Length: 116
Length: 111
Image (cartoon, rainbow over all chains, first blue to last red; front, side, top):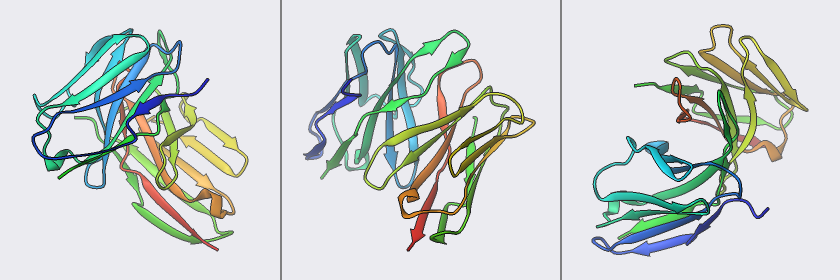
């Protein structure tokens, strides 16, 4: 398996522009997580899905952020409009979940977002 | 809300010295996971502990889950330059798959 795939790997955009980050989870995994990592705030969970359904989006910073998972093999995280404080590395991770037990999360390589 | 703290934040050691990082949760955890992130890389799963007082070993790495299931530690014996990176613990919010990651301990190993 190729692992979790994210694109783009790097994104530089101007303030006010729309940014879309993409993720392909490992086939067969039923949980998908979006994280943001910064020096100041560490690794933060933004949202996670189970079987394509958003379960907890309490970590989404504000309405400018939205995430979708139209099918089991694809998810997007969109920021509109983007702001300089959104600059961070965004990771997507996937895992298997079985009732009463959580399995390890497999992280993608991340997308380094810079908003100028 | 639930918080997961790690100490120390940074650690510099000479190659061959031992290293320990400690993880403390504000709430009792059903399990705890450990991850390693190399500089410029992504977190990679190391291990999961489930039972109170559990101890697991992976070569030079020893992981322990506290009796109260609120703390954990990772000990590396005789560090090597390949051990460089940031070590994170992560614990789930009660009854969910939402994992809260600790603040991380950044390890540097001087050759």
